[in-house]
Length: 116
Length: 112
Image 1: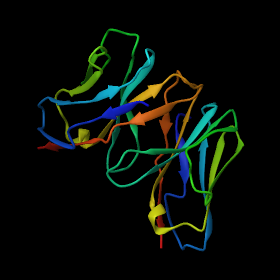
Image 2: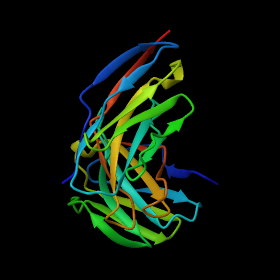
Image 3: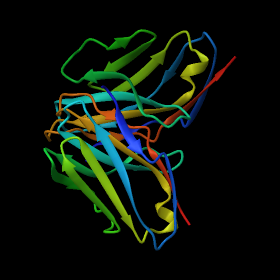
């Protein structure tokens, strides 16, 4: 079975600085997707960024970028120029392609605090 | 319309009550999901409907009964719940395995 590990339960960053959240996963599949979801206190799960395993190029969405190391099974999220609105719980998620729908395996989450 | 809506936002019920959670999307997505989330934990998948057929039931107790009346609606019927069932219940939808999953805002359920 696939497992996703987030080793940092909580992190803090100063506003305007850069922070990196770690995620590792274990799988025997060659085709899959990886995601970072953000869940602020408002509870809504919001997609931050996604990466297709077959793409070597790291995904980027504005201030958010990933470092995808397929051989090492590592998928870290870098947040640049951190803003107060980035404070949230961040979940790393693995999605198998075995089904015709989306089955996720979530990490345990990292709570990000942003200090003004 | 690019969102998933859930009603109610909050629900308090006794252990003998029967209630339902509702979820709706109008994005043409053909897969819909129920997740349960306890505080400071990741969401746990409960049920998946694909093309209005139940595709996954993750060994959920029978006091939770899902229903998919049509491709836009998903219900979760609750009966004889226990206090440990108190949690945030998230609905989500996706087009297919290549599409993005969109989550609803959740229903905060408290069982007394």
